[in-house]
Image 1: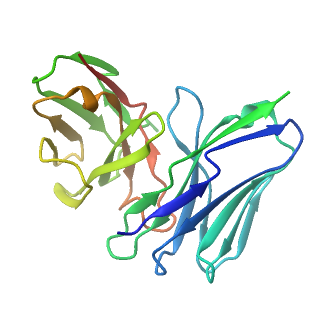
Image 2: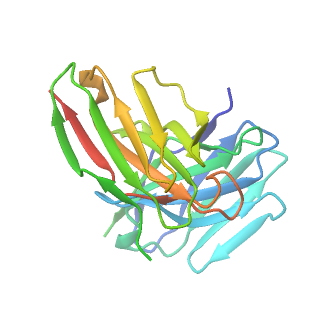
Image 3: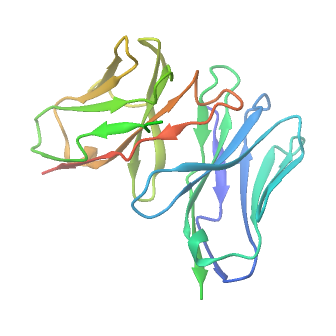
Length: 112
Length: 116
């Protein structure tokens, strides 16, 4: 079946450095790619999303890039801060039923 | 506007029992999806309801079922509970479906189910 692979599962970066999380999807017809952030003990919340007709999208310190040919997309966080510590989930829409297929999550640790 | 509300927040049940969880979506949202979250397993999709009909279903056994009412509130039922069903159960509401572009999924706080 369709799936989304997310790497790494855990990422530890120094405060102020950049973090990159990568996802690869299998359904070539996927056209919607959201990223959710889940802080410890809280609900997942959408932080940024991108559609297939766009290659890159930025929102302050976060950005998402999409490579449709290679079927992968990435989340970039610059100038990381302690509040960026969380689990990040990527997802891709399945064109057949418009469900989201989720990655397994990346635990981002920001070291002071 | 009010967010997605899940009740109860915590549940402790015994193996073999059944349980019903409730999810009240954001007003106007017609799609409700349910997920099981366990440590290290991410978000496992259970099913999605749209306008009182189950539109999509994940790979869970038939012990997991759900329904949606005319006011879009949804319930999830797990029968014959097993120890492995212990997890955080999240529901997410959206206008027309989580996979539709520009249709953000709003999650509830979840119900933490412990089976002993």
